Each structure stands twice: as C-alpha cells, then as structure tokens.
Amino acid sequence: MKYIPNRDQLPAKDLKRAILQLPIIAENVGKVVHYSDSNYLWLGWVLETLYQATIQTLIMQRVLTEQHWHELTFAPEPALCIPTADRQGQVYRGIVHDPKGRVLGAEAGSAGLFGTLAGVVGAVQWWLKHLSGSLMTQLPGVGLRSAGWKLMPAADGHLVATHTGFTGTWLMLDPTRQQALVVLTNRVYPSGQNDEFLDLRDQIMATFLNEVAK
Image (cartoon, rainbow, N blue to C red; front, side, top):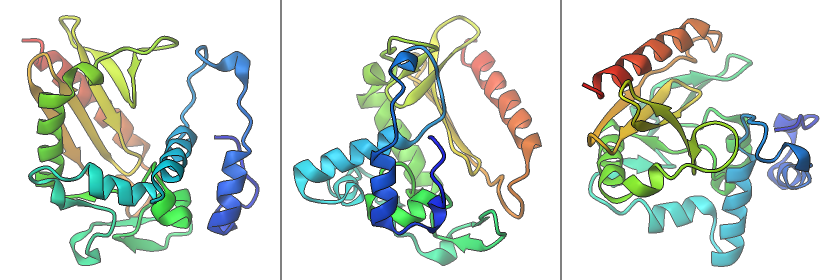
C-alpha cells in the first residue's frame, strides 16, 4: 500500500477516504507482486454497500457458522489473548495489532479476527472439505497464487495453499493429501524486530512441504 501521511493518526472516516483514493498503477497489474491489504479493505466496503452491514458483521453472520467456528471472533475476551505490541511498545491484548484495523474497527476486512486453536483447526478442516478446488485455482499473473492464498509446490510437485500472518501465525493447506499445518505463535512481543522468526518459519514450511509429498 502506498504511504499515507499521518496514517495512524487519522480518524476512521479520513483513513477510509485516503485508502479509497490510492492510485492503481495499471502497467503493474498482473506483472508485479506487492504486499498489500487494500484489496481486502476495498472488497469489504463493496460488500458493506451491497448488504448494508459492516464486513465484520457479515463475516460473523454469514461465514462463522460452522462447528468450532464460534471460537473465531472479532471481539475476544482480552484475558484469553496473548499480548502484542505496536511500534511505540504499547501492549495490546484482544486488540487487533494492525494499525489500520484498529482505526477502522468493524469496517476492516483485512485484519482483526481472533481464534483458538480448535477454532482455527475447525476452519481448516472445513476449507479442506468444501473449498479444495477454490483454494488451488491458480490466478493468472506473476507467481503461484490463488484467491487470497500463496501456492507452494511440495517435493513431488503438487501445490499447497499457504497464508502467513504478520504477528506469527500461519496456515498450510494440502487438499491433495487432506493434510494441513496450523501454527499459532507470537513473533511481535515483546519486540517486533524478530527476523530470526522468518528464517525458522521458512524451515518449518519446507519440512512440511517435503513430508506431505511422502
């Protein structure tokens, strides 16, 4: 996402306006991959307009209805949450770590969902059973990607859907083998300067990709 001056100090209305006005560089579409959460924010606002409810309300009412999914929520009990810290070192428990998510609140479709291990595992089992085709449908353009997921090849060549979270969580879903890896760790507390975590994550992901091929 392009830099927005004073982004974290803007009220929700002004931040939303600034994000909606971000330019799209047409010549890069389908050619360059950049990390960005603006598409999920825009998608949430489209759905909000269509259904006259915030994206987080729509997710709670229309998506998180399966067994165990009740353990996924945008409003967790703080005492049940592990702490995270923002750039100023302020500790948050049960508050979304992403600064845009904190400002936008229920209008943020890109961050803010909390869950227990059972809740995340239940969601993964449902995805493997019901969305295996959608998970693995490769989009045209640069790199191996499906809608919302990065695709990685296992040692024998079949693809695995992966998604990583900034705070230290990640998923790997293998519909071919009906296996998955769920990792809920915390790399941002007490300090977000934890690059060693990224190397260790890559090693674990490589191990899983090798093992599911056997």
